[in-house]
Image (tube, rainbow, N blue to C red; front, top):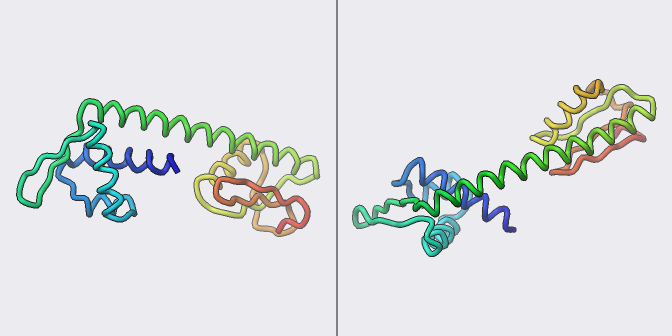
Length: 157
């Protein structure tokens, strides 16, 4: 998936910018990927002219971000922020629509199932819309599955 690759490249550029002497092993650990994956991304970034590699010692390298690399990092950062805000807006709108259905069914509280950023957006939207959160099982539930928010009106599941 391209967004995974661009997210990795953005992370690599940020890490290299903060520590040009970083090792591929530590980059792999920070990104949660194999060293070979980091090596592949670094080779691509070098081929495209976004970073340069300078040998310091026999086995020690320094990564230098080129002006083109800095421009890429800035562009990737803006893209990331725009995608995140779009996800935030779409999730809020979806939750508002679900909460209208909850109100129409005569409820003023819901149960929230799930954790993470999307669940946090649900919590904030409920607060904003005056819908209380409860652990009771006899009310509708909003279930967070990844990036999806599913309304369970019937049994509260």
